[in-house]
Image (cartoon, rainbow, N blue to C red):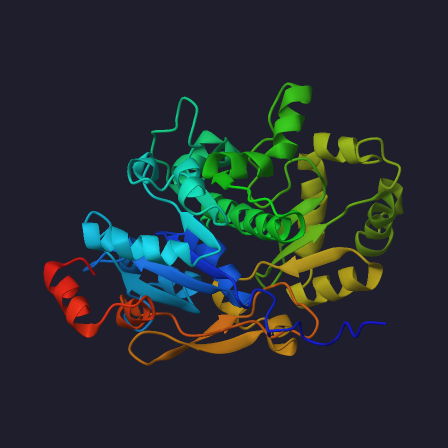
Length: 403
């Protein structure tokens, strides 16, 4: 029987896989960072002088951007002017040795540069190309730019988020993250297909279609009920009770009842009102949603009678899910992250180190890469030498602004 606890041959699962990425912002860098976590060599192609514009989103992490630090550890940075003949020559040499090419260039730019999937297939038949776009590379919106909040608006997500009085964006770049996750899983699928079937599949993901998938439940609810779920702040739009209530000490406690057993326990042991179990206003999930206002009044009064810790301890005892509404500082100090040893130190440009979370997927016998975040062009000379360029040629390319 095979020893499944042993690390795979060659170290990390993607050791030996080379990824070249002409990437910027969030979606593509998120996909490629996860490949790097698993051991792939990720060569990040950036513009000379400025690089990935996410480097300048903010300067909060010892002078570096919080976005860039999160998305770009364990990569190599090479600067290339892809509008120059020499810059394109270097990219061609890189692609000739690569397994995967990822790009999220502006609409139409990859095709104009000969970096579309069909052109790449002719020149590099074993290369897996991955394109990340706003609305797809075909169709009526193929030429339209898309940023995260624009896509949140286009998919209807913003109309579901916020309070009854005001809509709100989701507080993280959810469209970018969704697209990055699908690009990552698509690339893994394409690598597996190439290895097992010998066929090369191009991967294409759009921010709009990635987030559209995540809108599945409210889409069905709206299509078949005739009305979309209402904005309800920290209340769940279609389940009750499922929301936040304020305790006597000011702690906001979220509690969630998912089934009739939990509802009975809540009524009998927390509300001390077993008669509510079969009250026609609350006896079913749909009834509780329809009479949410009355139900919330009962719960708010009970939660306000005790301190937060007391409320949560009792809810734990009776098996009703609950949590305090943490702020980000409380999340950073969360006992689960500390107790499960999820933090590692990662070096950033300038020599400082920052705490970074391990990837959320644990693979038995595998320790993910948690290497440095690269400075702009940090690996340019090293990579050019590996490609066969001598120092005289490299210096000339620098002088010309090609690298």
